[in-house]
Length: 255
Length: 133
Image (cartoon, rainbow over all chains, first blue to last red; front, side, top):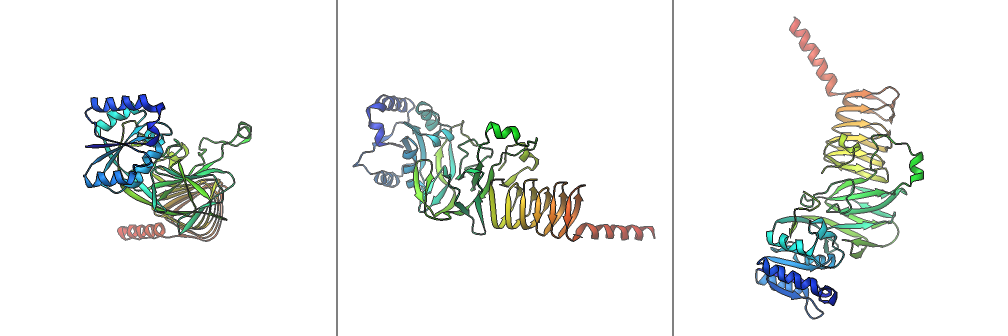
């Protein structure tokens, strides 16, 4: 049995045609289920609670990254498999999981290839993708040692999935996330005078993460979580291995 | 975890890269292989392989399974197996290692103690002499 949770915005006229098409395809694939269209009166917690009581094993988020994040935060560690039918923007997680369109998502949901993904606990909530900042006064505190960004650094973050296609690989099923520091891009003028060698590195720093704190040298600041919400520092992060069951596609960005 | 750049292929199964845009302060302890291209202050320990490139600036005591040093290092070095000091290296500190290679042009200021390797060689020599008798 499938529960389909449609985010509020999918009820707008803009998505009417696409939603009708999705519902038609779900029936065609024989995986139609109970539909919940979120609105101000319909609480997501109540739907998930009902699913748990009814021992529903599949919840499909119909919406964007925010929809997925809201639902995922409620089912981490529960015996529920989550799928995504991407509608609207952004859909970074769906893309990373190999789900490129709503039409493709339906055959992926139907195939039901399930992976147990790591998630990270962060100040009481969870994140699946990333935590990112460009503030050079942010410190990654690993208790026994600290990592500080030098002026040549551009961005730093903790990643479960390598969503930027940077020069490292991450496995969201290995119980470890990656703390990554990326250098500023060098302009063409600087490149002319820069000594280069065949062994030149990408300049990216990578540290394995199981537990850490992100803090700021001077004051609490906002840090972007999963590219769609913010939390204030200090942020306590702990990786919880394989706590989220997700339906994934073959074209996912990891093995 | 595997990394993709050409530079990093030289050390398979690298777990940590301390790149040129970061400074690590404190007692860093890793289980796997480590590449250092940036700054480290404190101590650096791994059971695996440590590669400190030409751009590295380490002010820390190092303990590793084996290591290659090509940058600036102030601190004592304790290596279980092989230590390879490259021509660009400047090392200030005592070294304790199983085996060592020092390239022409490298600067090393400190005491050198060869532990396992020297004893084994002495043992072999005694055994050979014993065999002759």
